[in-house]
Picture 1 (cartoon, rainbow, N blue to C red):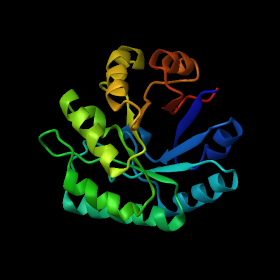
Picture 2 (cartoon, rainbow, N blue to C red):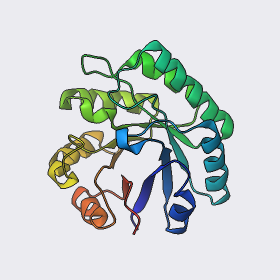
Picture 3 (cartoon, helix red, strand yellow):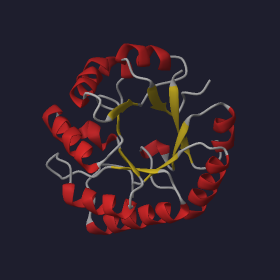
Amino acid sequence: MLYREVCLENYTDLPQAVLQGADRIEICDNLAVGGTTISKGVMGEAIKYTHEKNIPLVILVRARGGNFVYNDIELKIMEADILEAQVLGADAVCIGALTADGQVDYEAMETLIAAAGGMELVFNMAFDELSFDEQKRTIDWAVEQGFSRILTHGGPKDTPIEANLEHLKELIAYANGRITILPGGKITAKNAQAVADALQVTAVHGTKILA
C-alpha cells in the first residue's frame, strides 16, 4: 500500500482528509506562496484532532513565502513557532534555511533543530534550490542531524514531477536508505502510484493525492 502524506492548508480540509485515508498530514497556511506556519490556535486544534485519529501531524515552519534566506527576526519567529509546536505535541516539524550563496544555513538550522527538542525533523523544499553537489552534502548532514526525511520535487517547482524522475532516482540512490527521500509537488491521486513505482518508493507527498 502506498503511504500518502497529504499537505493541507489550514484546518478546513483536515477532517475530510482523515476520512479519505490520509496516512500522515502536513499542515501549513498560504499554499499560494509555498506554505507558511499556521497560527497557534490552528496548530492546537489540528494536533488534537489528528492525535485522536492516530494520524501523525507535521507542522511546516516557515516565516514567509519567497526564498529560504531568513534574517535574525524571521529565525526568532520560526524558533518560537517550533517551541510552540513542541509544547502542543506536534509529531514533526518541516524546516529549511539557506544562505544567500546557495548553501544550507547550518547555523540557522542548528538553532531550529535545538528548538525542536527531539521532535521528528523533516527538511523542506528549500532542498530543491541547492545544486546537486550541495544536495549530496545536505543529505549527509541531515543524516548526521537525525532528520527522518527530505521533501523534494526533484527540480524547479513549476516542472511536472515526471520531468524530475531521473534526478529523484539519483537522490534516492545517494541517500542509500540512510534517510527517506520523499517525492512531492504535482503528485496527484492519478499519478501517485506511477511515480512511486518509477522511483521504487513507498511514500509520496502532495496536496491532491487523495481521491
